[in-house]
Amino acid sequence: MEKKLYDKLVMTHKPKEHRGQNAFIAFVVGGIMGVIGQLLVEFYSYYLGLSSIDASIFMIVTLIFLASLFTALGFFDKWVKFAKCGLIIPITGFAHSMTSAAIEYKKEGLVTGLGANMFKLAGTVILYGVVSAYIFGFIRLIIMGGA
Amino acid sequence: MIYIYSFLFTGFVCLIGQLILDNTKLTPGHITSIFVVVGSALDIFNIYDLIVAHVGGGALVPITSFGHLLIHGGMVGATENGFIGLAMGMFDLTASGITSAIFFAFIFSLFFKPRD
Image (tube, rainbow over all chains, first blue to last red; front, side):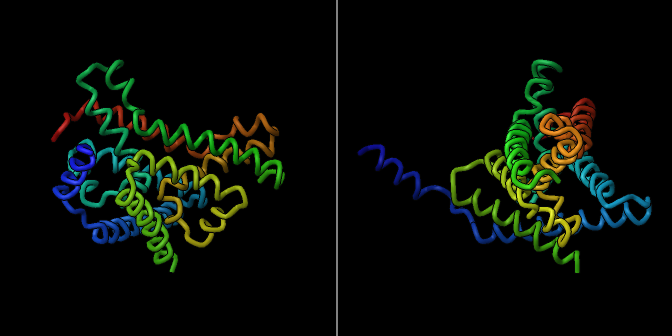
């Protein structure tokens, strides 16, 4: 009973989040990231004469580089706090989580700190990506017989 | 036109992520994991390929494309070497992304100090 009362009390004092505003900002910022991605793909395929697959890989590497650099310089955290999923869901969130973990745990040592904690957040993405891709790839290979 | 599609698709994916983040207790780690699984699940029947063909580069920006590229690399390997090839080719397309993320994160963390 007391716990219920406590929960109620906590709920009334919780700062109200502006869900609609958050969703709108995430939509706009995410959309801008998509446009930047498309611009980079066209830039690389036009000026470097790459195929569309190579150009998209170049684009992903460019976004990862910029996200890592901005995280290291210190102002990407503020952007993420503002845009939330608008920058976490794009590939920039992957690079941001790795770089911020690396910088944060560096003081605990290069191996036990940086090395052990770098994949704390990004590791789940790789783990579930590989497991699901293997299972679904298996299914696709059986149903559709390959690419 | 392809820019508008890119804007709408990436924005829509981020919007769904933001709605999940605000209305459930899931953390960003949960959400990115879910989106990767969804991305590779959509590729069982070539749905994500269809999206990429229409949306262009914008479809490759969200983390869902990570799952898409994993399964795609696996399928290319599988056509050459069967079921073992699935594992051999798995990281072919994402290798550059993962490698550069690790490399840049390490290099930048050596030169920069944490800020609050």
